[in-house]
Length: 64
Image (cartoon, rainbow, N blue to C red; front, side, top):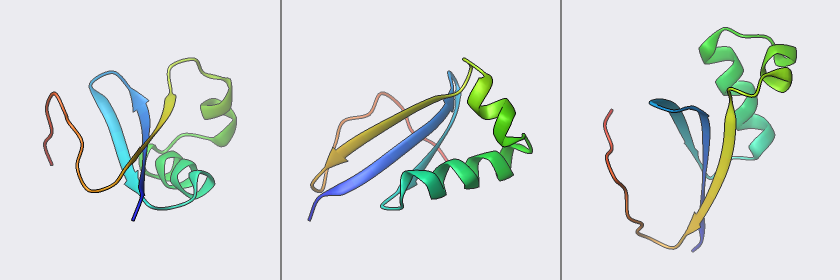
């Protein structure tokens, strides 16, 4: 099964969402960071990346 990991945020402060639609991940991120959708959309600070993988991938670092 292919998994989809959506990574949203800025360097050193990113959140990851597994196997949910991108729009849902964005809404959850906006809510968790207490920012407006307009602020999110207009800012160059927030990056969105998607990684597709089967059951493993390599990371530099990871924490809870």
